[in-house]
Amino acid sequence: MSSPPDNPQMTPVKLSIIIVSYNCQSYLIGCIKSIFEARLPFAYEIIVVDNASSDAGSELVSREFPAITIIQNSDNVGFAQANNQGILRASGECVLFLNNDTVVRAGSIEAMVKRLEEDRTLGAVGCALEDGEGELQVSFGGMLNFTNEFFQKYFSKIVFKLRRRVFGLRVFYPHWVSGAFLLARRSVLVDVGMLDENFFMYTEEVDLCERIRNRGLRICYDPEWRIVHFGGKSTGMNRLKADTEYRWSQLYFYSKHYSQTRAHILKLYLLLKTGARYLWALITKEDPERIHLRHKVFSTVWEYDLSNHKNPRQAAKKE
Image (cartoon, rainbow, N blue to C red; front, side, top):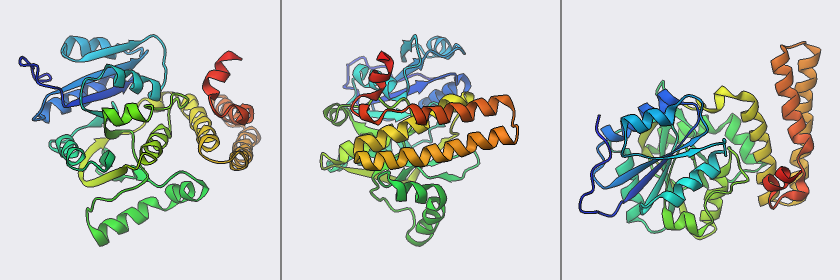
């Protein structure tokens, strides 16, 4: 198996690929191998940030791919902070956030890099994602709000298929593209303050893309190029953590980008929704683990303090 190309003449690194990993060893190795097999035609580096995995994935990467840079965290610091660690270590002109449960297809990365380089109006680009069965995933969208979230959940796949049938695989410019494959210039990421570390996981890429758009740059989605994204291979191992962080991120996102009134409306809605699910779990006597999950998610919403919207993650740590 090959490694990132040697760079004896110290050719400037064009691309830094950042992969955040958490207990996903087999998928991580497959992801790295797919990058090497894609044979990128320019100098690049791979930075793996391991969030305190217990599966010895980083040790295996170090043995099999010694040219890869590994950042080993003693705690799970979350997706946003781990990617920021990678940005600070990166030496490439461009940075690619790539999920560890992806498989890169030949031509996809260089096509996205070329598009970003040739159009200075772009701040970030993403390609199409498909699952292990070849089904396209919705990996882009409009700014998060009540209407768009409802549309995204129930109608976006239908509309996307109709759009593809009518217009073909045309490039378009949404508000955000998925953090599973998000390419941007390092200078732009640094300029906007990188990823907001108040997001442990979920919606951090939507927040990032919004700040990039506020700099007058566009977000580009190119469905002609695809990679495989199996999805949820790290979060699926800890459903409780994933569900609580999802609701936490929703509340933080709304309190950051919208008025306190809208944030309070969201909190009330989530209290009713998560409370009803917890109550139903008790009434129907679901298994104890599921009841605990429902209770924890409800408690997360109940305890979220909207008054600490500027830096809630740090505020919570001080309590």
